[in-house]
Length: 258
Image 1 (tube, rainbow, N blue to C red):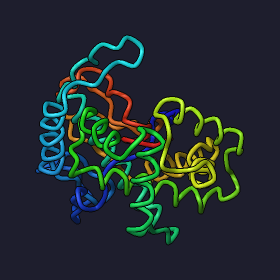
Image 2: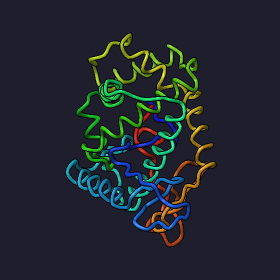
Image 3: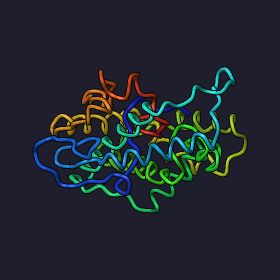
Image 4: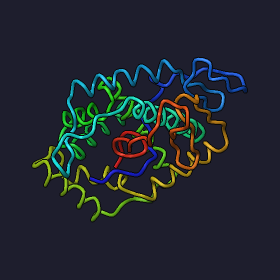
C-alpha cells in the first residue's frame, strides 16, 4: 500500500506539552513554539529516547528491495522527524478545534486495527515496523490518534473526495498478495481505503495546515533545525544537531498514512 508524501503528524496531546508563553520567542526549555504554545524539549527528548531504545530492541528493518538491513537510524534524524510530527499535530489540532472536529476512542481503535492489518498484515507487524522506524510502542497510540484526526479533518474539508473502488480493490489485493489471508474482507476495508487513498483529501488537509503555519509563528529551537512552512517539516540548519534531511516519516506526513 502506498504511503503519502510528507505531511502527516505523530503525536497528540498526551505527548504534546502545551503551555502559554509570551509573544516573544525565547526557546527557554522549549524545542519549538507554535504561536503561543510551547513544545517542551523534555517531551521531544523522552519520545526520542524511547524511540532509540525501541529500535535497538526490535532490530534493524530490512530493505524491501535488497533484503539487507536498512541503515541505522541517527538520533539527529529522529529528533527532527519527531519534532516535525509534534508541530504538525499542534497545527492539525488547532484547525480541528476551529472546525469542531473531534475523534473518539472508537475512531482511534478502528484506525489502529484496520491500518495495522492492511498496511502490515497484522497489528503485531504494525507495532514492529513502528518500533524499527524509531517510535516506541507506548507512543503508537498517539501516532494513531493523529492519523485518525487527519481522516476526520478530511471528512469535514473534502467529504466527497474519495478514491475509487478500483483503487481500493487494488490496494486490498496488494495486501493480500503480500500477507496472505486478512481478517478483514474487502467490503469491510473499502470505506477505510477509499478515504485513506484519496490524494484530494490529503491535499485539502495539507493546504489547511500550510495556511495555519504561515499565519502563526512557528519557531524551532536552532539546535534542532528550522521550520519550513511550505514543506511543513523541520529542516536541518547550519549549527543544528541535524545535518542531513529528515527521513520520510512512516506512512507519510508524519508517521503513518496511506
